[in-house]
Structures are given as C-alpha cells and as structure tokens.
Image (cartoon, rainbow, N blue to C red; front, side, top):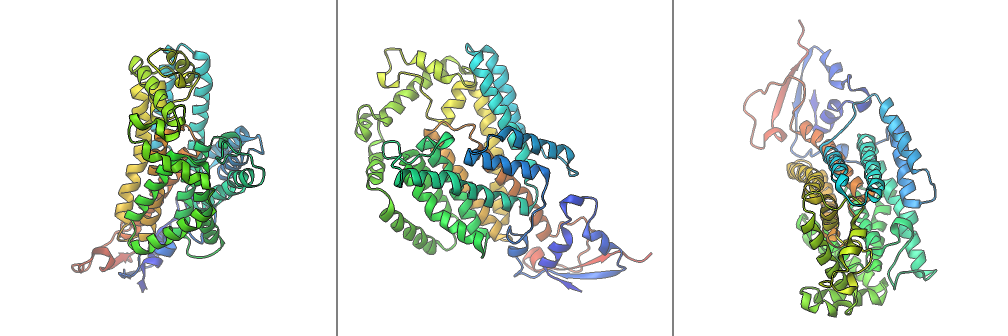
Length: 487
C-alpha cells in the first residue's frame, strides 16, 4: 500500500473535538506492514492550507464572532454579553484550555499596572483603565481558545475582514465622498474609527490579513473578496493621510517584497495597484505625504505643516513625555493618567505652548513607558516578541517544505511590523485589533507546527527506517513502518 503525504496527513491529524481518538488507532488493528513513500513533490499546499475546510462551531466561537461584530459596527451594545457567552463556552468546552505565552505576558503586564498604579496621584483615572486592560486580557483569552482549528481561523479572517469592509471602510468612504464629513480632508468614521491615524493603523492590520488570504485561497469568492480588499484598503490608508501609517505601509511592502521569490511579478502587481490609487486618491493626499521629506530634522519641522502643525506639536509633546518618564522611570504615572499629568508638565516654560493641554503621547511606546515605567514596557514588548519570534522561527522552518504557510506567516508578520512602525506615531497600546492580530499569528504557528511534524514524519507511531534515506531527508526517503504486528 503506497501512501502520499496528502494521505499521511489525512491519517495522522486527529480531530480536535476528540483528542482521545486517533485515525492511527484504527490502523493499529491492521496486522500488516504499510509501506509509505513520501514523494518530493508533495508539499502539503492544499490539504494543510486554510482553504476548503469546514468550521467546528462552539459557544466560544459564536460569542467571539459577536464581539467582532460589536467592535466593527458599533450597532449592538452587547460587547460584554458577547465576551460572557464566550467565557461560558470555554468553561463548557471538552478540549483543553489554552493559556499561551503571549497571554501570560499580557496578564503579567496587567498585574504590574495594578501594582504600579497604587502610587499614582490619580487613582480615579487608573481604575477605569485597569478595567479596560482586564477586559482586553479576557478578550485575548477568549480568542486564543476560539481559534483552534483551521476552519475557525479561516472563518475569523473572513468574518473580521467582512465586518471591517461593511462598516468602518464603507462608512469612511461614504463620509468622505458622499457626505463630505471628514477631518480637514482626512477620512474618518465614528467611535474608535473617528481618529484618522487610528483608522489608518487598523487598516494596516486588515490589509495584511487580506493579502494573507489571497496567498492561501486559490479560488472562490473569498479570494476575489480579499483581492478587492487589497485594492480598497490601501486607498483608505491614503485617504486618512496619516504619515506614520504611510510609513508603516512602506515597511509592509518592503518586507513583502523581500520575501517574494517572484519579485518582478510582485513589482508589477504593486505598481499596477499604485497607478490605480494614484488616479483615484484625492489630490491633497500627495501634498500632505510629500511634506514628510522635511521631517528628518528638528530644524525643519516647521516646514512640514507650519509652525503650529502636527509635526512640531508632536515633537513638543514627546519632550514633555521624556521629562515625565525621567521623573517616574520605575512605576510611571499610572495607567490612564498620562493626559492629566501632561497638562501639568506642559505648563513649564521650557516647552512650546503648542504642547499645552491634556494631550496624548502620540506614541504607543512612550505611552506605555510613561504610564507603567520601564518594567511595564518590558512586559508589553515581551508579549509582542513572544509571538513575533515564534512566528518567524516557524516561517523559516516552513520555507522549503510548506511554502504556502511560509508566505502566509510572512505577510502577517509584515502587518505586525508595519503596525509597530506606525505605532511610533500613535498611542494604540490596547487596540483590540492589534491584540487579535497577535492571537491570529499564534494560532497559525500552532497549526503549522503540527503540519511540520506531519511532513517530517514525527508521528506518535513507532517507525523503523529500512536502509539509508536518499539525499533530501524525509521527503525523498522510503520508510517502511511495521504497524500492529500479530502476536
């Protein structure tokens, strides 16, 4: 009996909803030897990819999807109810509960923030923000346990992108082109998406998901919908006119280009999309983005957008933040207490009056550092790095034997790095979209590591190699496995 890698995969991966049963157990009853020939051409693109797989519905998954609908539409005030349903599903589920490394980092950050907040001069501001971070920790916990199978991960990506397209993206486009409702020519929507910088940063993460779906979906309506997103989402990013997010977009394209085998084709595709966007984007977009060339020195900041413009103001705000960090390096000023402290610090004559008022830090890193101190920043970055480094290690392992997985991980990693680059200029530490992107990457890492074990023949079945494998390792070796010898 000759079995290819596709057949081996089908025989070797047990269903998650019944961890005690394994297809291999059925084979163990067969008193004969199975000769397994692993062919070089079999790279497990289709059977191990995310396409064409059904969804195992759970209470946790339903509650989680409802939460996604809430944070994208703002039509249903049932976010807390959705999370409660999802948490109840975790209690009732028969599979083991996941509490991955990045979630432990986030929990440690929450605990440290609570301890550091005890010394804050504004405890009434710290408590509500602690509740917010606690909710985000529970949401991440729910997401980690909702996305355990390929079908669930695929459904999450499709559903999240669909909700983003139907509400924030459509709403921002309608606001801009139909209702003429914008912020000084910059596209906005409402609620969380009413800040153009935040809207653009969120769109970066959604763009990486759309491109990753294009890389994994070979045909069908999901692929076509994702392709539409690859064109429309960059358009939205340009319409926000966020220079930090535009820098993140450049970082995303650079990483995606570096990981391409067919780079000429990639350049042609990106060039075609760029021509389309250049023709459709409003003229003032390029004027604002063009001022970035003056942002290379503090002496030329006034040339970016005027003496009282956002570039000069951001620089002065950062100066205030640096002084605050220097005065509170260990515990910070307390979670959620930056703005009120900034208002007091900015009155110092050493700062430009443009920094006065209850300002934000305009930087994720300075925000976390100023509010929770250096230990808080270390814990926060530990959460991010635990996911990013694991994804990169898995991607490198997949490069030769599981190319579709490697491409997908690369694109999602590019989205993560692009967001982190844009976050230098935006205060988005507790953005749910960012934390859910970490969950998505981690879920794929778990799935693709299982695939690597299958491809490399690391099965819980006793194997015995007959003869010396030919060059090329497991992919070209012929392994004869004695299964269920008769007594």
